Image 1 (cartoon, rainbow, N blue to C red):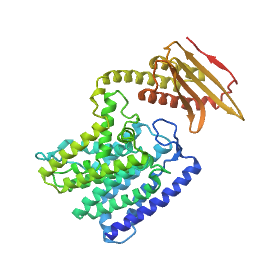
Image 2: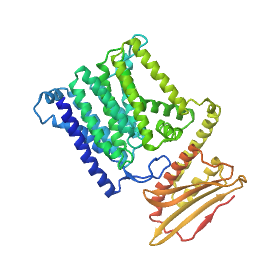
Image 3: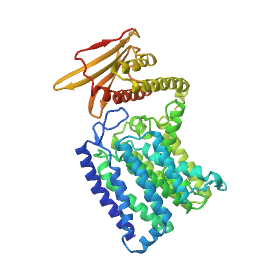
Image 4: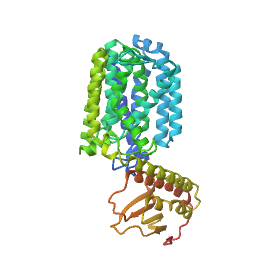
Length: 494
């Protein structure tokens, strides 16, 4: 136990110190997560490189084992597959997350690297070969072991990433998963897994000091994907040492909240015709906050309690027989069903218009894709405007305006494009999106409806944000060299 405590303490101190340094340097260098999207919950720019502290905190005591001549160190070094998988795979995932935090990585790059790492771990012996069935004999995967293992790795990595939406949530969820694995490893006398979980627990808690609401730094993709990677890899090792009656059920239950949130997101977006990897504000934590009218901190604490329930169920499954496991799963199923009903996921009253919304979203996605592609090829503000004008038809707006602006000394000069049509007599509802490059405002996109609405549809809002981002990318290029004529207004009407 002393070894585990030392590993925990070392990782805690390293994570504390490095997160503090990274936060201050990120503030000084302007490496911030801007609060410029409706998808964001925070209202001010906050550093998002806290994952560096988590990664360094986790690896610090493990690296020390290579320098200290001890029984634990010798045992750790003798497991070359485990060491190589964690250091090489974890390093690659952390590097991918850091690149995404600093430069931005598209879904293709992320999944390519994640699948490559998962395949490498499979080759090193991280394999899921049996799935538990408490209602009957276990299922041997055979040839399906490879795809199931890879999907598990990639799924958990992205599940932790998706649930990282509130201060302290992803770190807390990961801590409950770590605690579950630590208790299970301790009950079996598995020194190495206990050591790994003690190190990761210290790194998480050291980071949470700065991340719990109100957060002064975010973990970013560096931290969330790294946590998902370590938990996915260690869970495979934990499951292989479980009884066949509960193999893989324990780690699935231990990570129940992020896994459930990911499955709901995939189902929701598929049924509504949304891109699978688009961001929205309908995750479990968003719904708990809005439907239960809770504060940011109270929402996180409620979800911590839910994770605690998942943790107790996972531990119960490990020590229960088949009949008891079946009862535990049925009880947890009832709890999940009640929660989903409470949060509106099982609202059958909304099923009637789902197909209509799906068709509309598919059409909107098609138009937005064409608009974004055309905007990125535009060579002037006039061509950008021509690319954006089709939005007026698909969104049914009565007035659409695109404004570009530049600041010279204390003057602001720019160009305004607009189109207007008769579209209803109701009181106007408007939505203005700033076209920004980090904190520099390059213009704005304004849309006005007169169809009686008093709010914008969430899918329309997400589409407009994507268009505004594309306009900003292009505006940076030509506004940096353009000499806009002050006061010039080009009005295009029909």
